Image (cartoon, rainbow, N blue to C red):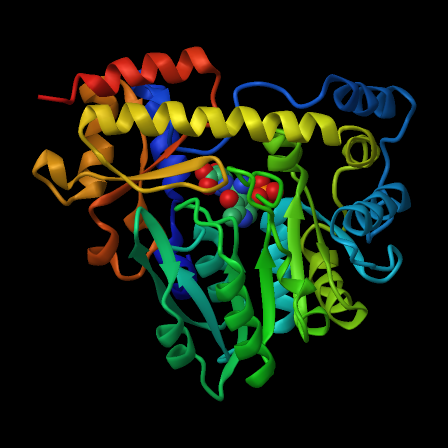
Amino acid sequence: TVARLRPFASTIFAEMTALATATGAINLGQGYPDTDGPRAMLDVAREAIADGLNQYPPGPGMPVLREAIAADRAARYGMSCDPDTEVLVTVGATEAISATLLGLVEPGQEVVLIEPYYDSYAAAVAMAGGVRRTVPLVPDGAGFALDLDALRAAVGPNTAMLVVNTPHNPTGTVLGGADLAAIAALAVEQDLLVLSDEVYEHLVFDGAVHTPLASLPGMAERTVTVSSAAKTFAVTGWKTGWVCGPAELVDAVRTAKQFLTFVAGGPFQPAVAYALRHEQGWVAEQRDALQRKRDILSDALRTAGFGVHASGGTYFVCADITPFGTTDGGAFCRALPERIGVAAVPVSAFADDKSAWDHVVRFAFCKRDEVLTDAAERLASLAG
Ligand code: PMP
Ligand code: GLN
């Protein structure tokens, strides 16, 4: 392995899922639902295969999907984007992120990440030859908030891009209007490009609304917005994502993307297009169900003795293990499957400053109620 990729030999998700499988533990580590997306959407994919949609789709993605993405953004957020030049279908958000960094960051330029950060950001920055700078989220009441002074301090003359993720994996933080406005003001002032990872855009709880960063003043022309069918329609295995943004930026992403994968899987594209147009009711029900699941798991963690951080969205809730007399989240998570039959992931895996996050572990609640109830009983055995 080349030096720049050596630190990324194996992802925490692969490691903890392998451990969960080997021990038969309930896997609350890797974030994937254990139920299917909307039935009619699955049928469209099946029909697409039966109807022979099995050869290379167009490089930028099938028009039917690009048009549905543009229509969804218009309906939901009142944002207009041209499906021909401002939308690109990718192999999941993961490829969208890598292609954005490869297409828009010169080797040696700096990319600012907010820590803890989704693991692929650091690896993608490294693949692009970029230099990452990190800015921490800080505890704020029951949850976390952005450290705006640290963010301002991290941006310098060599900064090319800022990566923002809200709703945030792993903490479940939904950045508020003031934080988004401050990010936008800084990006405009420093003339930064912004990668806005909004894969959990539809999984926001407690009546809060998601605000796309690109909708703020001065942001449309500098923001590449990433989303994915994975979380919206509970199909993480379909690997169907997309970017939206101004034509020049999307073209740079496309330039990288065409030599990573050329195109994304064909039969999934009409199915996701169908779901964007006809399954918004299902998406809202899923969001409400996830909010309830968040409560079930948060209560279970609290009962078990964890310090629980508030999660306002995503699939995830973070918990402080200090009450168990340890701050070593890595060791805690490696032992937990054997100890009580539950798997989680250490948040230190999402951070450069390991010591700041070592005492925090992430649990996924995107599971059937009976699985969460079973996990709650197992977690309760940690108490006392
Ligand atoms: N970004 C974030 C914040 C994620 O949590 C994930 C994983 N769901 C991804 C990107 C990757 O998404 P995909 O599975 O569509 O590649
Ligand atoms: N996004 C999912 C998570 O954060 C997992 C994705 C993966 O396994 N790479 O748990």
